[in-house]
Length: 357
View 1 (cartoon, rainbow, N blue to C red):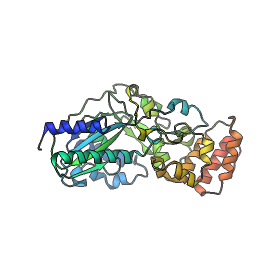
View 2: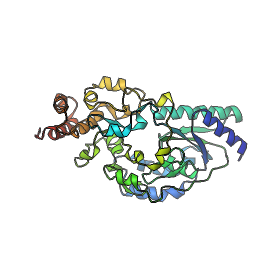
View 3: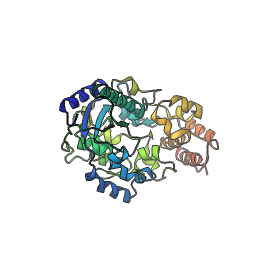
View 4: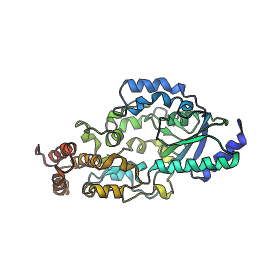
């Protein structure tokens, strides 16, 4: 099996049959990325994400994370929903909530891991038993670096991976294997002088080319952070209630992005253009029911409401729904906890122009 080009080509074909867009092969040497990553940590750009620092060494040593690993099979899979509402139009309507397009369908962790394990079984049928482990954004794996060095794309100025055929609307997955295959070579970067993603970021989170200060990133604030959302950043968040896609929506390469004709990534419960008024009325049982099998569920009901309160506070005070929004905010006071109450008071003041404590 050592360096078997024919086997590699078979594996790539099986990956396509399973719905992946591309499969490339990387070795385990990530030393070229290590120094920049530690500088990023030193600046505290990881915010509350302590695991980024705690397991930093493992990110650059795949063979230590999974002993015996010799190669990593990197795969991509498009996720932009075929049936989704226009993202820009949703962002332009303050009474609607915007959810990052990767999260409007089934939880990608489950989808990608299932397919990667199916690929491993197909390889087993061909070569016999071998050691492997599948990952999708679920362990200290430096997926972007592995994908870049194996030629799946290049790291854009927004820090996401870009591909000339598919833009950036795709998931990454990794299958660690304990035998060798011919590795692929990196592709050149093709961002040129374009800084559209940096310029459009609502909170100025892209502080340098390829460098994001997570503490200002809306995706971090609405998903990763358990703290109060900083008051100075709330007005900049608009109606974004779970994640943010602005840097992708503006990227010229995403003109070539492919839609995912895949039931797993079809929009669920109208969450591509949901009404803030309706979402804020969900009790915890409804939240859990509506988000079953989705990535959104991970933040829990309380943080969901926190994010919604900020979005409601960004609805213009002269909006036709102002009175109804004020009423629904007031009804929530004292129901969940002091953090939500603080965000509700802020929203009420914004909507009515009167301090509510």
